[in-house]
Image (cartoon, rainbow, N blue to C red; front, side, top):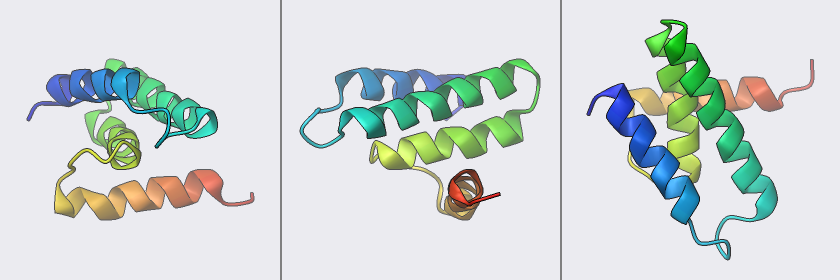
Length: 83
């Protein structure tokens, strides 16, 4: 699936995700990952954008490619590690 299609699917899933399963804080995090992915894609960095989108998709329980799961975990770890 192309990046624009995955992005659209992810945005739709975020809008319609059950609030009983995804609390406000988690939803805010997902929205940040989506925004970052969209921004990076607009700047021409599709590979990096995909990493952020995969994190959002994982939190929404959407499928991501197995080879991309490691990249998504790395992005998530990097963003939540103390600097």
